Length: 429
Image (cartoon, rainbow, N blue to C red):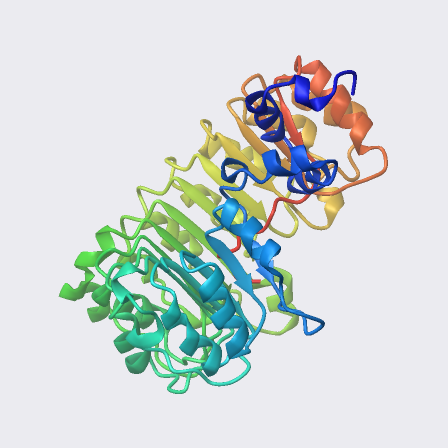
């Protein structure tokens, strides 16, 4: 640098550091003690989560914990089941509000009582069966987010599960994936909504029982659905229409965001000689307020595109065989689309990129792969006058030159992301 760092004010350096990636911040703080002190200011680490493995080679030292406290770290992923590690964490970072417990067991969950400020709790990949009840956290009323992913419960029944989560009455977000509870999805949704009055987001993995009866219409007319008005986001993973009700969305008519991840593509169903039912068209017809829609795998787009609510402004299509006709039909249905994420396979079916500016002229955010798309056609994206964010989902050695050309064509008003987005610590793996 042309001037020593001390000639610039700390405020100016802090402003510069705000634009650095996390890896660049670590590099900067290693340059000198002055940078180390500036980079460790808490304002630069607001959304950072520390991952703690508690290596057996030796415990974390006092300087390590002091650094985390200076950064005011409030979120941690803990990959240890040893009680002494949890006690050390509680002693050194007692104000943690977000905890992710990896490879948990009952002894590690028993240590959660040492933390008085937990608002968000994620339990992933339990090694043994665990007991889920109100005592799992010290202040059950503080908990607003609960994520259980690939967890073994000592009592994997709907009644026991609902009885347990009902103690967390202030939950606004609940994620339940692969818990071994064999219950119809519609019954689970109804039961959860009946006991959690403030729930806004619900994510469930679908249990497939092709030989049991799907709940009848009385379930969708019951009085327990008053809480459905607060739920605005629903995510279903591993879906199969054969084990779901066509009336499922009648439980949540006020939804604004729906994400459906199918277990199979249409062709994979045919290969398995399963009937290719498609309830998705009916589901969309029952959701007049939807603004965000994400579809992964599942039936061909042409089977449901005419039922996509015209209120949708944010659309994700990660589907097989996405064609130019599908995009044209989608554009006719959603002329005011603002956010689009497409990731078709096979990848060469994404060659409709040049037509996007004409089909979706109001786009502000776009995510897509660039493989198999000639440079001249990819650069045509500069015609999207309102586009401010572009994320390219696949990489290549020449991508940096291509993105620089594209940014130049937009007078550098466009932000282009070529590296994968950091995974949300609260999500499942």
